[in-house]
Every structure is written in C-alpha cells, then in structure tokens.
Amino acid sequence: MLHDTRAVLNSSVVSNVSGVTIARQMLDRRQFLFSSGLALLAPRLSSAASARIEILPDETIGTISPAIYGHFTEHLGGCIYDGLWVGEGSKVPNVGGVRKALIDHLKQIKAPVIRWPGGCFADSYNWRDGVGPRAQRPRHTNFWANNEYLQKAPNGPQKYDPNQFGTNEFARFCKLAGAEPYLAGNVRSLTARDFYEWIEYCNSPRDTTSLARLRSEGGDPEPFNVRYWGVGNESWGCGGNFTPDEYAVEFRRFITWVPEFGMRPSFIASGPNGADYGWTRGFLQKVAEKGSRALQPIWGLAAHYYCGTTGAGVANEFTDAEWYELLRKADRMETLITNHWQAMGEVDHDHRIKLVVDEWGAWHHTDPTIDPSYLWAYFPTMRDALVSGITLDTFNRHAEKVAMANAAQLINNIHTSFLAREDKFTVTPVFHVFSMYAAHQGNTALRAEFSSSRPSSSGGMWGLAGSCSLKGKQAVLTVVNPDIHNPQETEIDIRGARINDCKAIVLAATDIHARNTFDQPNAVQPTTDSNIRTASPLIYRFAPASVTRLDLELA
Image 1 (cartoon, rainbow, N blue to C red):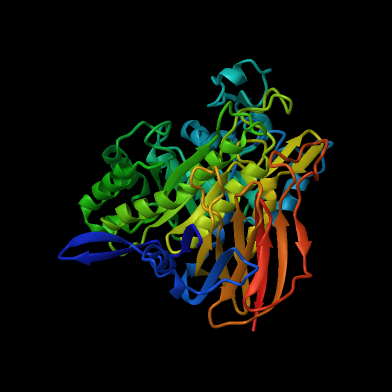
Image 2: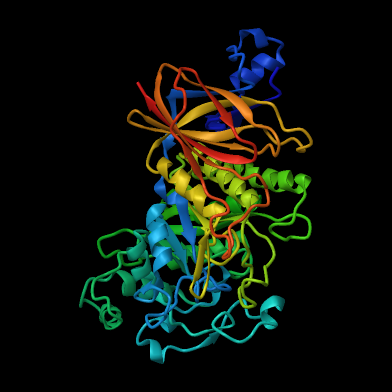
C-alpha cells in the first residue's frame, strides 16, 4: 500500500455560512480510500510502478501568472556592483554597463519581472540620489554596512554606495532582459510626495513635466511605464517597525490621488513575515475602516518567507537529515499561502487582492572564497535546486492566489541564479530550475494527485510532489523527488486523454552537494531524454534527489 498521498489542488475552499467565513480543507479522494480500508477501490498501479500521478484536465485551478517566476535585485553585497552592473568602461562584456551574460541568461528563462532597489536597502533609499549625471551623484553609507562581515571587508560600493546604478539604469536593464520593473518605495524615511514624484519621474509623458525632463537628461525621454509599485518593504521591521494599524494609515496616505498617466499603478502593500497572520488581518481590517472601496487600490499583499539554512549554515556542508530538514522548511510555503489567503478573505471577501511572495528562498552563510565584500554570496547546491522546484510547484498549485513572486536574489546573493566575479560568471542549479519551469508561464494550472511512499529517515517528507499545467494539447508536468537514494517508478495517467509523446528534462547529480563554481561551471546541468516509451498510462522513473520536467503531448 502507498504511504503518502499528496493532492495538487486548490487546498482550501472559502464559503460563507450565516456571515461566518469557514475554510474547509478538501479531503483527497485516494487518501480517504486508503484510510478507510477501501484501497481495493482505488485505481490499480501497473506492476512496474510504486507511485502514481493522476492529472485531471477538467479540474482547472487558474492561469499561472508569468510574474510568479520573478526575481529580486538589492544593493546588497555583490548583487548590483560587479554582479549586475559593471559599467560601460569595464573589460567585462556589457550592454550599457549591464553584464551581458546576465542579460542573455535572463532572456533564456523568460524573466517576467524584477524587483528593485530592495529589500531593506529600499527603506533608506532616496531615488533622487540615483538620477542625473553619474559624476554628480552622491555617495552614501549602504544600509548593510554595519553587518559584522562587511565591517571587516575593504571599503567599496558594497559599503558606500556610489549611486552609479539608479532608476534609469534599472529601467534599461529590465528592458534589455525583457522584464517588467517592480519598484519598492521608501515609506520609512521618505514622504508620500517623494513616492508620487518618483512615479511622475518614471511615467509622465515626454516633455510634460520637470521630472520628465530630468528623466530625459538621464538619457530616457520616453516614460518607463512602471506598473508595479511596492508601498514600503517589511514595514513590520526594517521598513519602519510599524504595527499593522500604523502601516495601514501610512499606506492609505501614500497611495491617495497618485497620478496615473494613463496606466493605473498596481500597488503592492507590505505584508506579513512568515506566519504572521495577525499582520494580514490587522492591516486589511484597518484599511477597510474607510469602507470596502478603500481596499480597491491594493493589487497585492507581499509576504516574505525564507526557509533559511541548517546546521552550521554552510551551503554545501550538510547531512542527509539536514537535506530533508531544509526541504521540509521549503514545503511550509504551502501552509503559509493557504492560511494567509484565508485571512485575506475574512476582509476581502471576493479575493480581489492577490498574494505576492516577493522575497523567498534558502539563506546560507557567506562563502568568503568568492569575494570578501560579497555578503551572503555562496554557490547553491542541488539541495537549493530542490528548494526552488518545491516552491515554484507550490505557486503553480495556487495559481488563483499567487499573482507574483520574486526569488531573492538574482545574482551574487542568497538564493541566487547567477554568480559573477569580475570576468568570471556561472549559472547555478537554481537557474536551471527556473529555466525548466519557464514552460509553465501563462498556462492553465490543473489539479493532479500524487501518491507515493515516503523516503525513509526523512522526518515525514513526502515521496513525490509537483504541478501540472496545460496549453492547448501540451501538458507540462514538473516533479520533485526528494529521496536521496531511491528512484520512483511512477504511473502517470491523464484522465480522459491519451499521451502521444513525452520528453523529459532532468536535473540531478550523483552527489547531493554538487554545485557549479567558477572553476567547474557545468558540474550541475539538466539532461534531456526524448527516447521515452509512450503509453497511457505512462511509466516513468523519477531519479533520486531530482527535479524533472515532462513535456506531454496529448491526443
């Protein structure tokens, strides 16, 4: 008998009975059969399979927003200077000062949206310092300069920001990469006027305002048409240490009568830290004191969750138990999304406001061999790749709830997709997962049921999980197998459809600590298998400790 059942579905249904909002957890059909002793009624597995995935094309969840595959750049460590920005005069190949290799790879993964300038850096950032002639821009102490690690590092842009990379440079970078810009406003130390004037600087038409002319003097006469605006960042902490009520008052003030310039801004409120459901309820309730119409300007509520690290915190030093520990922490995203969605629905009954998870990822300690100024730079391993797959699959399964997400961070920092040092550059296993999962963007998320045995000594980790999406007759199935030692021979069935063809892309390695470095940039990379025996149901063997994408062509 199978020991673990995982349903990929809309995991909570919100209804209203006599004015009381009730969240009902949906009971998985096959789990009910097994727990009731009725396993004989469940579909039989092929004799070759020990696990089963059933895809239900008639049970759609919602459209997978491309924006959930977004990224985040902050003036933190080597993320901006020497990572993203090398300057026009650099020997490093660049386009207008932006590292060319980064642009090329972002196009490859179809990066939809990039957040900037923070993060906590945004809470002390004045956008006016980063506009106008670069030679005249001021130099300021970076928000992160007091970090003990950076204090021991040489002086440089990581400690004293020269503002060479500002609004114009960021907007051009996004255009080169094919991504939309998402700007985080400073609520802690600037005013509402500074906020709406930043919007005017970015979006007012050519030659219409003094700020439009200032933008033009920076080399960009045409508006940037920035749609996404974060109203503060982590306002419960570094963004002002507000209570939910206090921040709600500030939020209303910052977004009232903001000029639109023909495009209504999508305002993103600073939301909860992890499982702080009280912040979600308290903020929305306070905003709604002015009436339900007061909620209308809120496009999204930003939640932050880092699954962190384990043990000593060294990215590539962990035991088997710590491998599973971090994956279980990443899997907590499922509960956070479900519970915050329920809390949001208590105030926003129609669920017009969506969740934005604009900071997420693992977070290990700094690897000093990369650069002594690169705070929280390290080489991610296969474990971080599985954290990425688990998280992106979770977002797909909740496509009707999550409208945007931004992995932290893009380059040289935390859960990074890229590492660079002067002319050295490498992609990480995290990048490969984003590349594989890009095929989901814009597709319709489907419910699917996963049944498999749990890995032994995993602390209760499930056996297989993933997500499925459909566009026309092309289904994309992504699956994570966390089991370090054992493959999963799996029967895959699509209810009411026949599989005509199948191609697999697999990210796996013989060593779970495997990683790409400057010296070995291709140690971890996906392999492709088009020679798969097609049948309905399909039998496929998921490799141990792997992330897999199956492209299924349906009849």
